[in-house]
Each structure stands twice: as structure tokens, then as C-alpha cells.
Image 1 (cartoon, chains in turn cyan, blue):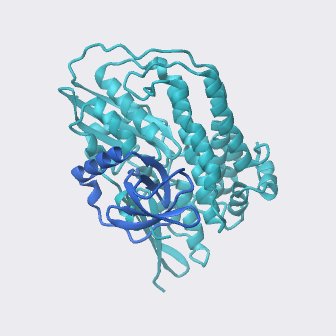
Image 2 (cartoon, one colour):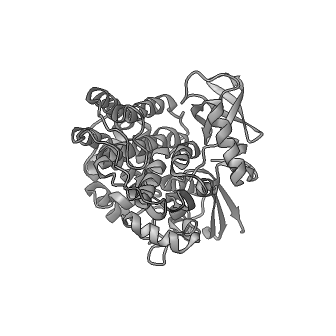
Image 3 (tube, rainbow over the protein chains, first blue to last red):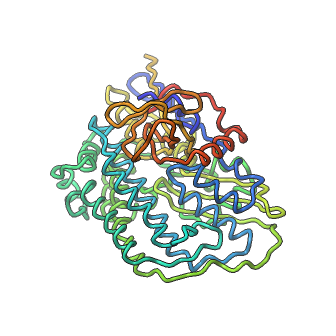
Length: 389
Length: 81
């Protein structure tokens, strides 16, 4: 489909050069908007109003990362709001996984996408914020007035969970590799058909590479690096090397994912299974998180002078997102963001390494497309294959 | 990291689709994820789907902000997966 205006929101371009039946060269380029720049010069209040306007898919995660960074800079203690914030972040992550499973995966299989089902999940997730914070002030630095409406929360969480179970799994989610294979063969959902496709011998290990997982570093780890080097937001490094982030990095110890990793390596099968494991888990754990919520008030202002630095980190569907900022005279003097797409689509990152040397036959375009989807860029992507034989 | 660029709906099409103007470029998108969209409304578009409806004031503010920071002036890409 033509999306001519995609230039505005950024894009990932992948170019493969093939010769003698192999991928000989891989170029991965991310064109990203300089969104962090838009926050410079703003007061914390202005910035927090702008963040959800600037980011369409991950507005909650971006708001939470910015709020945490501002809380660090302002000396606000928002710990009583952590459980409610985790609930909001998890619900957004679940809907973003569902986007991939209900929109992107059917397209990869040549099937019709399922936007109606996704719309219902997004509506359920959107109902959580007002059910937690009646004044919709939960994403403010220091938190808002947390007054959980138990009935509204339970209804939204049930709708989310039931929707995921019906549209994605349509059966109890498998717990081991043998069950996964049975489910993939039997269940009538796009997720099951995609899983069956990537369990095929030519697919399961495709894209496996040695790029290590990004560790769940605390916000300060990112803050140190972002503050020391402005280029870190575009070219992030862990121990001087690239890393991958997202469901596979987080769920590699799950028995089902671990079994696929040991059989096929970190390729398409492990990626897809990790996403499904995580989606099932997110949908399940929302209810127990909600049970633990207690009322809370906004953090009291310690009356700092409006100078300071802070950092925030949030797990999103695509991986770990981090913000760092510096406040000067009550305004954001500098703000830097490193998003999962920068890790996963680095020039020498997991996509590039996973495609290097791959067999170049008529199935390459499909497999490369599935690997891009597995690493899930938050912007539109194009793949070009050039044969030099 | 995707940016939420407001697009103005210029024509409603069959099958829950619409033509929108995104930074002056006409793009077709699906309206299946949003309800009650009319010509003249602003929507946020992500890879071919309108995600949410914006009130015009919010949309103007975002567009002004994008123009101000230079993020709205990137050349358009030719196509997308």
C-alpha cells in the first residue's frame, strides 16, 4: 500500500544485496523524527501535554518515561503510583502486541487484517486511565489522585483479557513446545497460522544471530549514557556492542521460548513465541495488578528551584524505552530519548546480523519481512533486494 | 519511535476508508479503528490506519510544533510495508 506521507513519522529502509545464492550485504537505516527536540524549552507541564500528542502508539509509555525523568529532576516521590502506572504501561504494551498479531501478521499471511477486534482491545485499554484516575491526571509528574473504580477496572480488564484470548489464542495458550505445535496446527486464528508458518524448517531459525539481549538496565544506566553522549539516542550501545530488545530479550527464560531457542536459536520461531507468551501473560496479570491497587495522592512538591537532571525507563511492547532530561530554571534545557527501534534496527543490530549471509532464494523477501515484523519497528518499513549475479 | 502526525480527512471512501492529507500529501487510510470520522476532522495515522480523532485545536498545536522543530519537513518516503 502506498503511504506517501510516511516520511513524516519516520521509516526503516532495509537493503539486501545478494550474489551466489546468499545475502552478501545488508544496509539498515532508520529515519527518525527528532521528537525529543520538541520538548526542549518547555516547562514540565507543557512537555507532559505534548508527549501524548507527539507519540501515537506508545503515548502512555512515553508519558511515563518523561514523568519519571521529571520526577527525578524535581525530587518528587511517585512510588505510591508505581502499581497503577505498571497497569497502564502493560495495557498499552498488550494492545501494541495485539496490533502486530491482528494487523501485521494477517497481512504477512495474505489474510485480511482484523482492525475491529483490535479496536475493541484499544477501547478497553483506554478505559483504564479514567478508571484509575477520575481526573485523568495519572501521567503527571508526581502522579495524580489515584481513586481506583473497582467495577470499571474489572470490566475493562476482563474485556481486554477476553478479547486477547478469543482473537489471538482461541484456546488455552500452550505451555511447552509440543503443545505449541499442536495449537499452531489446530487453532483458527491468524496468530496460530503465523506460528505454524514460522515453525516450518526453512523459517524457524531464520534471523538467528549472536547479538545479545539488552539487559533490563535501570533508568540511571540509560541516563548516564544519554547525558554523556547525545549520539547514544541514535546509536545506542551496551558494553560497546549492539543489543536486541523486546519480547525475546525479556522472555528467553520462559520454558516454551527456551525450548525453541535451544532447537532453532533466536530466529523467527522464538521471536513469535516470545511475543505470544508475553501477550498471554500481560492479559493475565492485569487483574492481579488491579487487585493490589490502593488510593494515592499526588507527590508533595519539595520546592526545588527547577534545576536538576532525571531519567526514566519503561518496558514497551517493542522493548525498553528511556528518557533523560535536564531542567534549568524550570524549563527543559535538554532532553534525549532512546527507543527500542534504535537498538533493533541499528546498522549492525539484530536485524542486520540476522540477515547477513542468509540464503537468497525466492522466499527471502517473505522471511526478511517476517524478521522485520519480529523486531517490530514503530515506523513503516521497506525492504529492497538487489541481485548482483 | 513514531511520531503522531495529524492528517486532515478530505474524502470518505467505501469500505470504511478515507483519503487524508498528511503534510500536504494525499494518502489513503483505513478508518476501521476510529468511529464517527467526518470530512474536515483531524486523525492520527499510523501505517495506513487512522488511530484516533483529534480536536482541531490539538491538531493545529501539534502541526505547529512539528513545523517548529523541523520534524514535519522530512521528504516523503515512496512506499511502506
